Image 1 (spheres, one colour):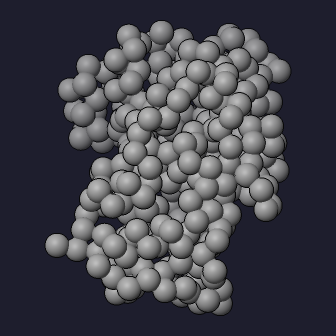
Image 2 (cartoon, helix red, strand yellow; image 1 turned 180 degrees about the vertical axis):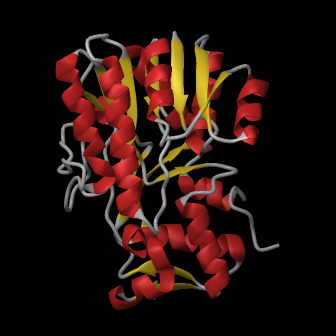
Amino acid sequence: MHVFITGASGWIGSAVVDDLLASGHAVTGLARSDASAAALDAKGAAVRRGDLDDLDALRAGAEEADGVIHLANKHDWADMAGTNATERAAAQAIGDALVDTGKPFLLASGLAGLTDGRAATEDDASPFRGPDSPRGGTENLLLDFADRGVGSVALRFSPTTHGTGDYGFVATLCQIARDRGVSGYPGDGRNRWAAVHVADAARMVVLGLEKAPAGTRLHAVAEEGVPSRVIAEAIGRAFDLPVAAIPADRVGEHFGWIGGFFAMDMAASNAATRELLGWTPTGPTLIEDIDGGAYGDGQ
């Protein structure tokens, strides 16, 4: 299959490109910079220059491919409205290009806000709909395209897709701990984050491309939920730092922009995904990665 992928040189996307190529697929990656283009070319992937604001490039990439994996996101935490608007426009452009083709369209989504007090399942619909909602409501936009002849598949990634080289949320928490001189956790530390190793997430995406029917929600989840206190304790061990509870009224001050996110409970099941795809995560756990030096150490 010829696959067009956005976010192809990112943390998750680069692992997906590797798995796609190893599985015998041809890949065209969207590249904004010369460095990204060179990295894709070195792997044997084709390159389409452009970015998420270049809707013509997105449409052309979708039209020329047999399937699309949309992983890119601006992640501009200082302008979430702008980020969400861009994501909405990009998903709309790709979906419109795929109407009545039956081609698979896989789109990155998340687990935030799905459930309260229990692990989310693949049957739990996203409550976010419309352009002004988180991520521009793109998961529901995507799934609406399933009724228009598009092979829509939602990829719900764990809040931490971890591994050596990760520069995402856990890396941010590590840096905050080093800057503050203490590894903190919000409140009583019982809120949980689902977790998955990046190689397992990439394998799930490729299996989803190959096997998932239109209208499917997939959970890139290996561990159902790791308590925030356990995460903070591992970071404390890695950097030889004390560990402390951060009261709810100080979470924003202590953690900055990531504070509200770190305080959320985002546990999720992977049972339906594993059964549908025959997918079995085999990578290290989040704590094994932190303890093993994936995020550096205090030496």
